[in-house]
Image (tube, rainbow, N blue to C red; front, side):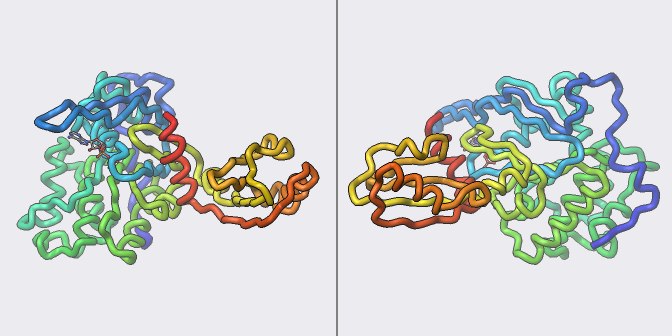
Length: 338
Ligand code: ADP
């Protein structure tokens, strides 16, 4: 859905810095260095290291996915940025403002859309917006309640009780609420968890339109599809560590890799020299797997090299890898080796 704003060039800008922010951090919407969080032991729960020293730099103007399985540490990361969880060590900046040195400006630079649809049923969207504006100290003259509600397709519901809003409308109201103080960075925590497909696409459109108007978007998700559909950069986080952070295209190009599995007449016990420099692996069942990019080489070339090296090939099969594979590769084997 397209929305037009009068004077939109004045919106979604960074709050005016009260003091110069460190120049190195300035180009990033969010940057984190060696960010660590250990939740203390409580009751019979042992201490938990939820973030193991995260380095991340999220460029301004990007639409960035923090992708990872449940328990990876995504919410912890976001809650530290939002000032809801205290980090154990390391540093983080939002729009150039260090969360320790300039906490107020750091917090004013992000809007966070929480996972839960937690809205008082007896308030109207207009009231919810006004209260939030009050919380953030937005002067009455600068409030844009109706304009934001309109952008979220909620202007005709401005005065309806929240309890009469559908799930999708409530979620849009939460996005609207997070935009009240005009932050340059919007963080969405699992924006479409438990949301049906149609609504999910609608939300994606809203998020995209916000991005087109200049807001940097960071979203957490455990849906590969969501990261793929929306984001230009994807960081994969697992067990409190960043296991990949790449442009979407680069990450997706890994998908084009194919896997060739070769069975020889006798079990293969070492990787043939012909495959030096290729991603070859001996498998427990005595077969050999070779990852290759069809744009660079072919199964025929690989098989030719193997038989030239003296291998008697009994059988072959190929497997297409997908983003799921890439994800599993990054979040299982590599992680286990750490
Ligand atoms: P995600 O958002 O990726 O699902 P979380 O940041 O919620 O991951 O959790 C990361 C890890 O920290 C998990 O093992 C979780 O159980 C643990 N954790 C999260 N919040 C707390 C808390 N308040 N106290 C103790 N452990 C927590």
